Amino acid sequence: MSLSSPAAPTIRPRRNTLLPLFVILIAAALIGFVIWQNVADDAPESTQDAVGQDTAEPDAPGPDSQAEGPVAVPEGGAEPEQEDMSDIERRDPDDLLSIGPADAPVAMVMFSDAQCPFCATWHEQTLPTMMEYVDAGELRIEWRDVNVFGEASERAARATYAAAMQDEFMEYQGLLFAGGETRPEAGLTEQGLVDLAEQVGLDTAQFQEDMNSPEVAEQIASNAQEGLDIGAYSTPAFIVAGEPIIGAQPTEVFVSAVDDALAEGN
Image (tube, rainbow, N blue to C red):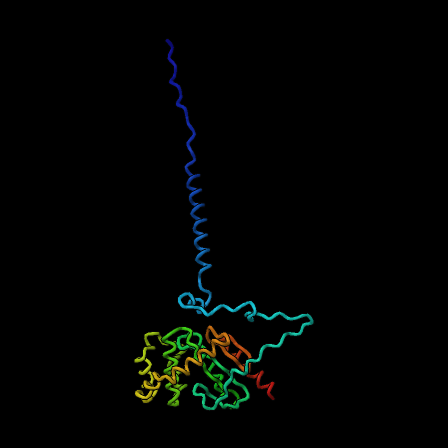
């Protein structure tokens, strides 16, 4: 009987265990990309967009409304004339929320909000330069609070007007925007605003009475409506010599606008 060596074991090919893992990784990556894209699409593009997510937006402009952005130049190369908005200027010597001569060669109207960080930035960085024109009798600045940030802003606007009734408008507004920063909403309670009036040296009893008077509330509501009527839904917005400037642009933009208007008037 011959001995034969045992048969060699059959070697079966092993399945590639890496393939399912590779498929899972690809699927996870695709799902992650879709989620990231949706989040990016929903993210606010500006401070005003973020506010609009929690508050009611004004009605969207209709198809006949003037769109933002560059204006198309008609055939022939001549640019269309921009609408003159000088009629928004009050030029009222008794306007408490204004500085500079009523008959100054150039007027600037600023639509603002006590909780607007960009308004505070403009107040800190650009207003000092504009004051040089005011002191020279060349510029008048008129303020209108539009209160797009809600109740606390409206209350601060009434407080500012009450301070203006005691001839301390600029000093009080300076405290609201001290250091180029806005006060937290918790600092815009009635008591917080009275405390600021005390810092300025106002008659706080009279200040509180004026701040809560129907006359002041009516004036503040009128100022806000005037801004909304011309489309100032975000702040700051300016009308300088009849032409709009949107946002806290660099100081040079305002210097150029005022200088150009002064040159045209000479």
